[in-house]
Every structure is written in structure tokens, then in C-alpha cells.
Length: 108
Image 1 (cartoon, rainbow, N blue to C red):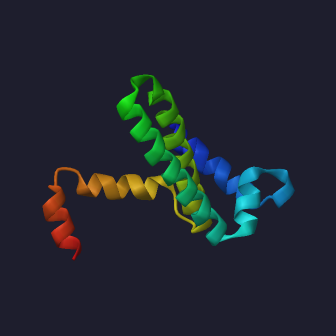
Image 2: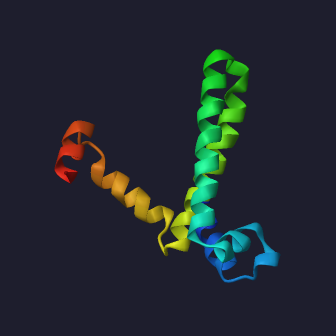
């Protein structure tokens, strides 16, 4: 099974748990605004880590960790809204082979 599938399954299980039982459950209990706040924090950390990695290649591991945190919290968001990584992968597959300018124009 793919790690995104495994994670989706775990997030669904944790969504139904009480807040004290897991970090993910506590995020779900706190609600959408708390999850969005965490995504904002993680996005900021990705930006800082990327700038650091540009200057110092030894910082790339930190960037990887921060992007993983951002992806994780984005998956918690998807779980909160009853979506999954598969929904995103399908959207990316639909876009594959379409130039970015064309794709954006078609959405407008």
C-alpha cells in the first residue's frame, strides 16, 4: 500500500478519536480554523527552510522535514473535509500534460 493511502487510513481512524488520544484527533476537535492555522505555520516554515537551503545546501534535510510537515497537515485538512490524497492525485493526473498557462485559463 502506498504511504499516502496508509496515512489517509490512519487520519480517518484518528478523526473519530477523542482529542486526548492523538495529535490528529486534537486538531480535528479544534476544528477547521486550527487546522488552517497549522498549515499557515508550516507553509511559513517551508519558506524559511527553502531560503536557508538556497544559501546552504546542508539545510536541504530541514527543508524536506518542513515540506513533510506541510503535506501532513494538508492531509489532516483533507480528512477534516472528507477528502483524501487520492482526490488530489486524480486532479493532478487530470492536469498532467496540460501547460500551466492553459490550465489556469481554463479554470477562469
